[in-house]
Length: 158
Image (tube, one colour):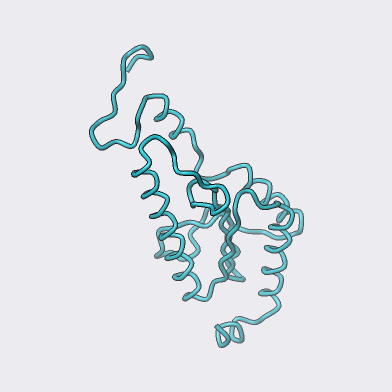
């Protein structure tokens, strides 16, 4: 399709215009600035992790940072997509669709938390607006604390 051709959204589409479609397609699902900063800070503390990885092989969801040996999964949630209570504002265009989408995301987040917790994982969630250094400190403390506790004892307590 040429740049000058008029684009119309198909029936039932979330895209209200060609410009909106381009904007939404440009939004990253991984390697966001907050994720990169936190990863860099955690790495500087000597911790190693997997990026955008499935904590459980049969769970079709990925965490932003995964510490497999200690079973810690970290999620850095975007304020808009995950419905931050401080910053989420329903859009003016197609609000029904987007509010439902964010609600489904929040429900999926709670389901993910429950499944990982049931499997013995510690789930840490942070909003993108939280101070990166504080997040990195909490992540490092949690991973190091779980490193110090043998799996057999940790599983009995859970």
